[in-house]
Image (cartoon, rainbow, N blue to C red; front, side, top):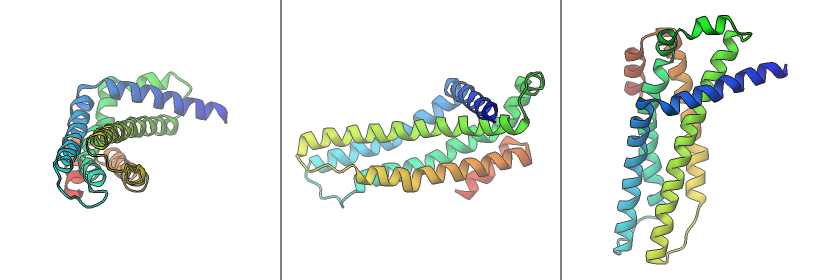
Length: 187
């Protein structure tokens, strides 16, 4: 029983490492992180210049935009796992190892989701640092509650749902373009 978890976590660890090294993930993840950060900087500058913003808008809007961008990242990253595996001949390698297909798929899913969670945490830390800079300029009180609540209640469930749907569609349709189109149309 313990070997199943070891196999799944091993696959997840290597899948996350491989995903973080791909150019596609770096470009899409960089775009997905930069737009919310620019919005956060814009809100901080506006508030430092005396604009009255509704409470929490400077924390919710960057994460809301990031949620939409995250769906696009999921559509292109998660949707092509089957094609990438066939191109890399991963199934021939797995055939020689004592690992089941279920362990491989579960490990791939956990690896992809963990990489996307790291991306979400990166956006959280960057927007928190922007707010810390804003506080040093304006002296307004700082609350972390909107950031944590949006991450836990909105971002992570949406990430798990969209990556699961995309993973399922990728397994059924086996066409990355069709999967990306369906997921983006769903958005």
